[in-house]
Length: 638
Image (cartoon, rainbow, N blue to C red; front, side, top):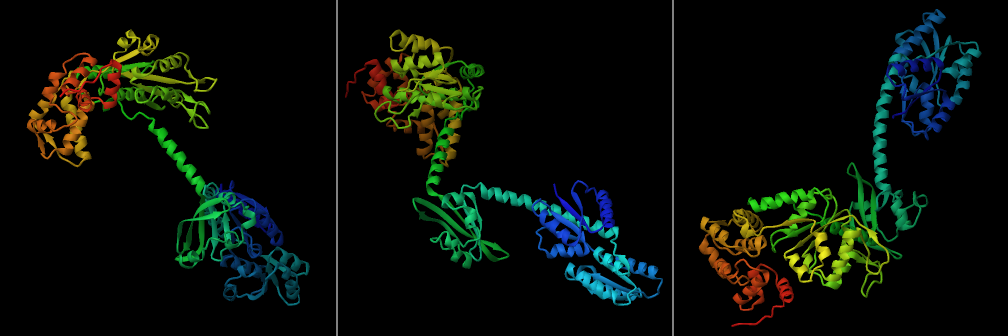
């Protein structure tokens, strides 16, 4: 709230001012004091430390306050011609003379154009100018020696003149002048309030900046030295403020900036063991350089912040970006899978998603997470087949310092801990070894993990979504998967249909991927009806993943703007990684067990691993792992 102080030199002005303050509704913003001259100066100096915005006063009191150099704006209640005319009228009335002799003892701010007014009103006027309050007694003594009829002035003047037996009259201010003074004071107070708010914002910006900030004037004198500068330069502000910058930082030359306005950006200096990056820029007001500002940072801290940002970015990557609307298709089979998944998302139990490779198991897992109550938590995904068994445990559960050779000194947080209050997605859960399965079972039962090499448990709140493209029941029967873990995972199940069973979805997906890759590669490839029919007839063993990558390749390498069945056959036959046309592939891969499919693909590709993997729609590494699982020996045929 703005604060105005009214200093009245006499009781009459005090009461006048109080009345007008009430009329203007300023009573909550104005403090009123009764004081004059030197006593008023002492009062204002004390008020400098009390957040006063503006002072209102009059006459000699205003003159001495302004002359004292007080750092508070002063609004003077001016003495108008009307006020002087009134006092001349009263002088005639008091003396009953047509042309009385009047002496005015006044400071310069009280008697503008008074001579002209006295002539008009037929007053014999003598002005005794005052410079200091101490001049008043001598001036009164001088007036008493004359034949003056009336003395006009302030309170001190009137008291001394009256004691000497001379008639006296005070100068009164009209309500109009007083009201105008307070209106002006209110404007100044508002401007000061805005100015103080801006100054506080600037001070907060300077004080809480992580950069060291030094401001200097044209004479290289330090005017601002913020806390960061104190910390980085190891010098207290009170010690350097008012000193020359070249006595503090001798290795920074600010002369080119002050002389020519030349900026210095991104320079480095070494102060003891610390390396600093600094900038120097001119401060320009009305096209004139009035100083410069120096900013600098600890390079080591910059590197730490960069590392922290990088870690935060990595943390944000542990987020699910797909929702159910991203899963394209209108087939009944897909619609039912999405319906079941939406129902499952509303509860918090463990989920097991099964389906062939490429059917979108992770898309469903992310969509379930994003529609669950854990949607604001992390989504942590790990492919259990992508890590060796000896690393999988440390990745899932973490480890403490010294847990094993090569362990980091601070240990490492496991993925289960990272997924706290979120979801962890365990893809290809069937590839987890027996020991990892037993550890996972304990996590499901106890809701807590123990890091490798540790002796204490860490409680976690995690929802588990597991996925597999193998028959877990069959693996349980074969003794390759723990039965108790299987039943723990098989709480809520979703089976994703393969693309060959999703009637009508192939065309929708082709249209989507065509549009996507046309935009990405700045192409405009279209397809004929027979091309759509040809691709729809193919049973896509690699499912949506295979379809997507085929369309991407087609968009990239196709020379034709409109792709027909004949064009697709040409490019398909040219596919080294596929090796066979859709018709041939459908012939060699009838619906059967995974093991039989692998054997058939090996026969068709003449035991070429690359071609066999492409026929099956899986990676080479996955195929090698499955060969080992099914104990299939590779025999080259020519």
